[in-house]
Image (cartoon, rainbow over all chains, first blue to last red):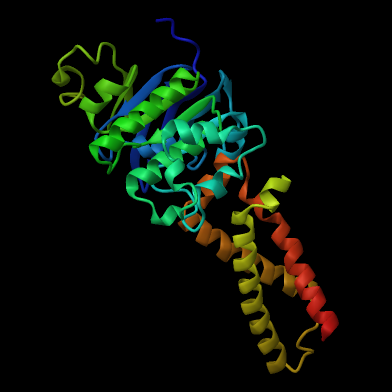
Length: 229
Length: 101
């Protein structure tokens, strides 16, 4: 498989929080048409790295790049206008509105009805978001993301707290995004799930990242639990 | 500013909350004016600007707590741009009230 240049990248990111070093020269990127996973234990620095990528946290050192060019002052709104979709690790839709209300806010030309049908969320389009189950809510959030037609999608723990049938559907949505050409980057701590879903994999431990080759075939202990020594 | 945003139910819900905040702030300002024997509904630009900043801060805190800043961000809107029409609303409401007084 030919790997295309990264759409979104975080390069040499150092970040300290409360005197503690959270990220150390961390690097991660996302390439078009591929699902890249960032896998690491809780507290390894995944969310902090994602917060840096979308400008919600300023790093001590390092840079965010979009299409190879440094983004001087990254912000979610600015990156979204370039084509980023960001899914944080907690609900972010307005609970008092319906999914249809959210789709109505999308920029003109976004064909959300076909997306809603593809993702199977048409049954609750008019319900209040606050009344949806966890799985329904996650699919709705992702449907908004797909309808935005992103060039890159950054998803923090998109499988968290879901029952198996919704986990499978979320994995299908990630693949759908990649098949439509988006550079998908998501964080997870479930390495077995990552093996089934991801095309590329970055491991993060104690704020240090590395690209793992052959993660599907190599024994887990070689690249995850025993690293770093 | 997109017309779609101004007509959205989310923006309209922010307008409703903001009007409530404006009313609370106005009651406090009127009470303060009465205490200091000043005209209660008079329009003081500096005072209005401070009140408006406080109202917006409360609204921003509440929508950040609900992570709706992520929703606006995904729509490509900065909070400052999305909420800018509420500044106009504050001064229109306060101006109208001072004329009535």
